[in-house]
Image (cartoon, rainbow, N blue to C red):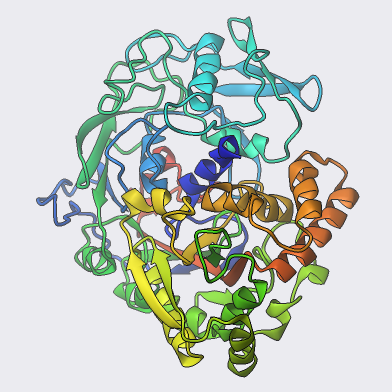
Amino acid sequence: MKRLVALLLVLCMVFALAACGGKDVDNTTDTSGDNAQSGGADSGNDTGSDAAPGKDTLNVAYSQDRGTLDPCYNIGYDSLNALRLVYETLWDWNSKGEQEWILATGIEYVSDTVWHIKIREGVKFTNGSDLTAEDVVFSIDKANNRKGEPAYLPYLDGAATKVLDEYTVEFVLTQYDISYIYSMSSLPIFDKETYDEETIALNPIGTGAYVLADYVVNSHMKFTLREDGGYWGEMPKIKNINFHMYTEDAQKTNALMTGDLDITGVPYQDVEYVEGLGTYTVYKSAASQAMTRTLYFNATEYSSVFYNNPDARKAVAMAIDTQAIADIAYSGFATPARMGCSVDCIDAKEEYFDQGVYGTGYNPEEAKALAEKAGIVGKTISISTNGTSDAIVTAELIQADLEAIGIHVEINNYDTGSWLSVAFSPANAGDLIVDFTAAPSQTVAQNLSCWYLYHLGGGYTTCPFEGKERFDQIAAVVMSTKDETVRDGMNSEMNVILNDAMLWYNLCDLTTVTAYASGLEGFEIMVMGNINYAKLSWAN
């Protein structure tokens, strides 16, 4: 199962609470006024103004940095978003769900598992090399053979994927997967001729309109327009785009107040305040890839509380006041979950909703009785979070709810850089994990199957539960099932088994909130959650 962790890394690229896309919620609150400001963003590690009054600079907040600019190893969703300025992809999906061609110009589907991808001609890397099909095949291979990391595309037939001619790639899968057409939109394209795994961490070379100007780990990434005249597309209007590290909500809000940021995710508790500033447009949207805030149970043998104990897991779920989490942790920009993935999934159906514990909802009396039956009253359990403010508040609310039924709780908050080594390792995860569900394809099938296969390092595939054999069978084939009617039946069956097993409990469906400076034009959040910064411009 280790190889299957790959797609999870794709999910992590776009996840998190500053990303957004999918179905709009309340659309946009326009709070722009005549005094929009754009100054240099300051953080605890990076001080001083970067932008002159003449709008040639954009300042953006980011919060995750693994210490490398190699997109195959950088797991921060917002860092990867920034690196798209240098590393272009073959295509992307806009906010309307339409495919936009970038380094590819089209696909000929020879079959479900054989694609002929046409590569754009006349594209040059920033070092002057020409982009060819050789570079694309090389990039696919690099993504699938990363040292110490799982394959990016588990169903890739690497031996069969090859160059057909200078600008055509034959892309071959061992089996069809409905998510790959979306996942491939996050694949960075490298220059095969000059690729160096040692220098790429600090010296990115891509086909984008921007080059790296400066990078300080956990402080800032600064990009400026390439000046070689070799960019294949329309040159962006903004010369400098600077990303500044903000690790705390208060930093972001203060920077918005002073005008030192042009784009940032808005802390949920500060949305009304930011709307009142009058210098930003506040964009509200159902979260990228139909995202939820989720509580994962360590149902493996590494948790003496939850291993082979579904009653214990259900007791914890019923003890949690999800409405309070939506109201307090997310200031009302969330709704209590109704199934094991978001109701905003494109193929979600009413028949999947409100089953099992999701129908019972918050019931502390029944939760306590079930907890006593399961033998966990008086036990001490741990909750792990990635250290973000909403995750911490969520964990604290769960702690209070569980303490109320006699379960003692310890909270362990980790930093974002080490989070994956905690959350996706059964031995390190503790008893409970505050995390999320999401899927590039925004389908129920991918949400229910991929988090089963990937979370806790694939630990759910080894722990016992009723219906496991059937769930394993469905999870192995559901993403390669093209017949929607058949797949809907599989979704329904997986949903019932998962509700009974209670391997994870969705807490809330999330709305994300992003502020961008008044006068900034072309703002759009793509389906994968990224923002195409190169398309932005300042109004005259």
